Length: 180
Image (tube, rainbow, N blue to C red; front, side, top):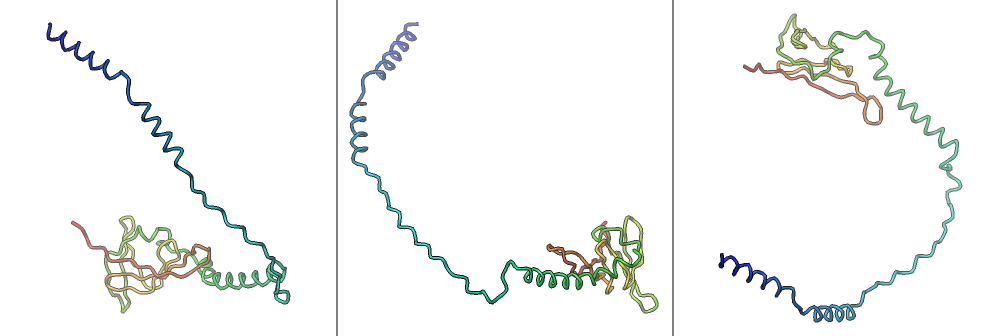
């Protein structure tokens, strides 16, 4: 018990010694000196440039906000729309084939053969097999079969680009190897 009392007394003595006076005054004096010696460096702002208005020298050309300029732009746009519409118009007028209701990534080519001198591909959709010849349509993007090889079916799709214009895009359907 006396050992425990002796340990507690020495611990109390150390704690009281830590609470005594310190050299805090020296530290405060040094901080005040450093603060008085430090001067901020401010870079002066340069003078603003003088504004000089420019005169409009294109008076003889078409004004950018005139009706003529708008009419020219609309004519150009309508001629492009007519050219792009020519791609889609025949596609919209014809009757849809059975394989056009399925997305192209849901189809798989499982084989090909030649019948009467014409290449025919076997396409599997939802566990059903379909025979596809050049000229048939596949997928939801007006995809028309242009060529059938032993290992792939080549299509020409008509899709809208980011601007909304109709463009042609090539696509292929690769032969799928059977996995065991």
